[in-house]
Every structure is written in structure tokens, then in C-alpha cells.
Image (tube, rainbow, N blue to C red; front, side, top):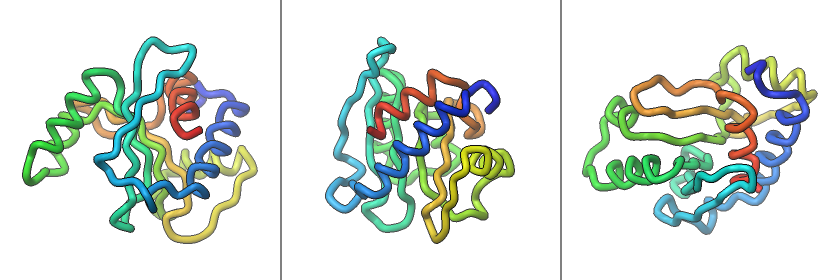
Length: 152
């Protein structure tokens, strides 16, 4: 997580907080997709908002055609085994969790950025879902900026 500058983290938290206040899960469903293409990228992100069911609030940004194909494969399965999802998903996630779901590194970044959160499903968490790998922290500036553009 040291590959991301503090100023970029600040902007990412600002974008996430704005998205959380907007609460698009109140009028969007997971099947309502929109696309973003940050100016510095040649890759399109296909975005879906999670949370219409009131349980898990997030913005998933599926990277390029591979990400979109993975999302469509997930939607075509009638029942999804959580482990199977890891072999399909190619996305960046900006989610909102309870504090106990965050890793120590997440909490350190929040503290470093002088952010304070309270309450259920209110703590920002950012992850990279690369097919075949365990969900992990963002890889660097490019991932952070891709999420910033999508959240904004």
C-alpha cells in the first residue's frame, strides 16, 4: 500500500465518502451497469453498484472485456460458490464494511489520512480482485485513480 501516495489516498477517501453519501444503491440494482474510462487509461471499467439488498454496499469496477466477461459469467450461474467467484472476478472494489472486517493496513491508512468513521457498513475498504488470486490491496496509483474516477 506504500505504492500509493498519501495525497492519492486522500482523494480516494473523498471520492468514497461522496459515493457513500450519494447512496446510489437506493435507486440502482446490481444489473444496472455503467462504463467509465479514466483519461489516463485506455481501459474501460464496467461498474455496478452493490447494496440494493441492504447488506453489502460497494462499487465494483470490472476491468476491460475480461472483467465484463467474468461478470457476465457470474450472472449466468444460478448459484455461485464464493470460491468460484475468485476465478471469474477481475475488478477493483470500493466497499463499505464494519470496522472488524478491515485489516490492520486499512486502519493504518485511515489513521494516516486523518479519517474517522463510525457505524455499521461505513468503513471504506479498497480491494483488487484478480482472477485466481485472493482479494488483495490495491496495486498502486493506477488502481487508485481508476477507482477515484469511477466513484466520482
